[in-house]
Length: 287
Length: 101
Image (tube, rainbow over the protein chains, first blue to last red):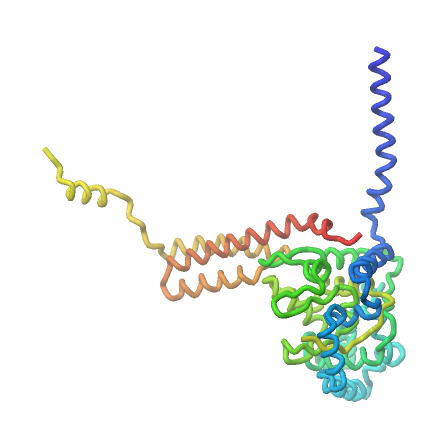
């Protein structure tokens, strides 16, 4: 009888010790910790590509392939996004019908602020992207919103990105459970497989950067939004972050969400936050 | 009484259930089932483009009076929609395995 009690007591003690040892890890794994996530995310890429300079990741496929990089550097002498950049500058300074301009809607007159977008708006309880803020600015001044996927929106964001070139991405996550939830939701979206092809964003841009998918070289996820908006030869034109998400979804044979859907805003928040410290390089050019 | 082989075959074929061509009612039933599954997938924010295409193909075939093809496309759409529902359900937890930690 004594032996049985000792066995029971021993088993209970062992179970308690095991619980005590494992429970903090379970809690830590479930806790939303953007700082730890960003550190792990960056380390993954730094270790996977030890020869790539950290600030070079923002150049997407060019950071993965020397030949492509040389071609791109030559192309940068007359970059294909130049027309959009000029158009964006002019649009940015042209007053609305009420006499106000975009500068009236943004801190620092909208110059050199790209690295702070998207941000979490504590009043609204949601993520606000630069594209969304621009259209809200237009609507607040009695103007019709632009398409989120190309043309005017790409030109405006190209100009704003250009004024921030070289500035490190600086996304804040306020101490607000809704902001943490948005970050987590963005992370979930990034890693979730979708479409008939059963691809996630991470399937290409975490598992296979530098590899070819048909004729293209996949860009690393780290810093992928720092170059937005981009001129894509495949599109024969400019495209915004919204266009990039919509196109990625379509390529996996998933029906894209509406531009600026909560999921897209959140995944932009996640991807931008984990690229904190890396320079803005937009507008960019891609094959 | 001895049945000749040709007569026996004729009897056998005439008694066998004939493969019936699909009619409009068959199409409507198949399409309704596929559409319901497709709506469920869309509600999960995980609609597939191929499901939408298969549903459109079913409608087009039905409009042209080809109910066999319309039923086949509806069934394909249903299968695709169900696969997308399965994907959305399993990914609720499975995405965590991909996460960089």
